[in-house]
Amino acid sequence: MFARSIIRSVFSASRMTFAMLLAVLMVFPDGVAWAGDTRCPATAGWNTSGVPLTNPIETFGAAVASTNVGDVMYVIGGYNNTTTGTQLGFQNQILHKRVSGVASGTPGTWYHSSLWKDPLSTTEVVGLSRDLCGVTSNGYLYTVGGVYFDSKTDPTYGNTTNMVWFTPISAADGSLGPSWTKTTSLPVSPGLQLHGTVVLNGYIYVIGGSTDPIGDNYVWRKQYVQQHVYFAKLDASNGTVGGWTQTTDITTTGTGLYKTCPVAYNGSIYVSGGESAEGALSQVVYATPNSDGSISAWNPANGLTISGTSTTDSAQAVVYKSGITLIAGDQTGHGNDWPCVFQGGVVNGGNITWNIGAIPQLPINVSRNAGATSGSYIFSLGGSHGGTDVPTVYYRTVP
Image 1 (tube, rainbow, N blue to C red):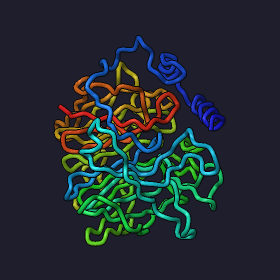
Image 2 (cartoon, one colour; image 1 turned 90 degrees about the vertical axis):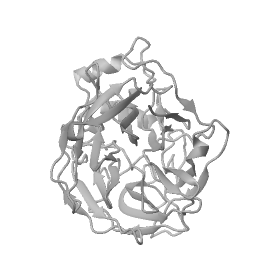
Image 3 (spheres, one colour; image 1 turned 90 degrees about the horizontal axis):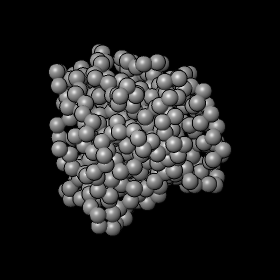
């Protein structure tokens, strides 16, 4: 794993602009922010959950569903970069727990449910990498594409897939299953990973991503980074996904984007930050779908910068009661974990006014963390801190 990280770092360094390099030089090699950097306000006000993730993982896949016992949180798959062995660090489970238990300092544990199984290998459970955003809708939980691993795939890094799966969520207690159902696959060959997924008005949308076929070796290459957007109708009665349709490509700097999770707010889809083949993006764009689910245009919103530094790749956006919050991330797209938390108020028909400081920064620098929201709480789950994955869950109320 160390050798693999070095190789990926070398490739990433070759893509740096001079301005990005200067930003990276302000950071110690382990990713901890330079002590003299005051672009983020002092840490305060985040609580550490007594229920850390079962393993140290990086994942974008966190979702929340309403049940009879209150909101339940789900953490889908993930990747643990400290694990060695044939299957490396691919996680093959979904963690779930009542939000009230996660937003507490009382020690506790997560419940486990197995991920779907490869239809050609009914005895082997796959493991999803940090590859997809978590979505729930109409009492179902969905996984879309991603990187998976079993003994038939590449023995080192796994393979990218275009498969789409769903499983029912029990209204009684939030448990999953008892089984997964494979539904309409994405029209992307061989598959898609690190894409954005969001549900709005009964449609599911898949935005950007990388078609790197083997694990995440070269996800950043231009020929793999996508700007396409697909959508499909969800059948509320049985959970199936209808046929996928390609709609207006997302407007990005460069040739596409990946490593960003979109959010739906007030009838529009917002895509914040991420990374293109050229590096981290500061842009924010939004679109308001038509009644048939199609998207006519993507509109620019105010971008994300801190003293002129683009931010952020691998950040997690969540919706809160009166706007959008973007949690931490990678400041440059090249291993510079960042603790900043942006609060965005939606104004002027869709544009955003961003505020750094209304919500304090996280206690640690982190990227590739999952974000979630429920009621007045926002959460940061796991992620990569200085090149090491962590299981820590932070939470706090929003202003």
